[in-house]
Image: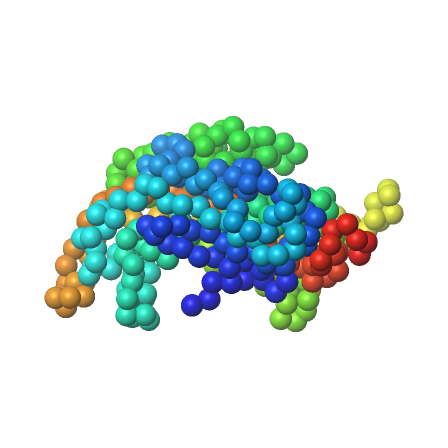
Length: 367
């Protein structure tokens, strides 16, 4: 089972939904980065459950505890271990699905592959394991911030409702004004109404989350099998419930000729090379070109719903039906934004180190 990602800046995630704790071991972070538990807590609070009617009712404080890697308020170059203890498990909610794999979940595949499966809350396959992503991402974001790189994720579509008027200049401010974390406040209200209607029906709904990274220098990425967009696609597809990834224009690039999709270069007033458009999403030939890196992920509806569904009984070897109880998100997109930010940050931090843009051992030394 692969639980580690990254070549220099790497994250090893551990824990399960209803186990004692979850967390991550972050290796490869240079020494002398100022880092506190609060830095990580801010990011964890973005994905924490029970914060609104749009999320699961499970109440978890997701309080971070750093076990290693920090000395006198700074990283010391050793592995950083962050842990979050579970406090509000209700495993009895899952006893009825022990032998009946849930449609849309990985239950059946886990049993076929490993022959054993922690079915309580989805175990290691639960979306709760993304706590490890966010711990690693919080550290990566702090590292990138020191180099002027900022990352923001926001919801651009729920069901068939799309954000049409997004003020990217004030994006962070606007997404904090609504529970959907959408930059279009008018669309956010409609999205929230749709999510709550699906919740009332015992159903769920999916959507699209966009991530924008600014301040990224040109030259990140290693062709051919270390492409920046390839590594981004891998980590974004590793987020639970993600079924598709786009970079820049994405699938819409198949609809137009190159004369319309090519980003033409020019020198700006300060002598920097930029592109007139950004259809490439800031990546050309697998390498960053200095423009904002833009990705979008398609997030499927939360598969745990209270409607009756058809499944099989693995013990009795017969067809049966299933009604899922417990506490589940009617739409996972608002909480996925924090995970998408973190995933993007992990890859960018790794490539900044691999490309020589950040000193690999000591931030106080020149590159």
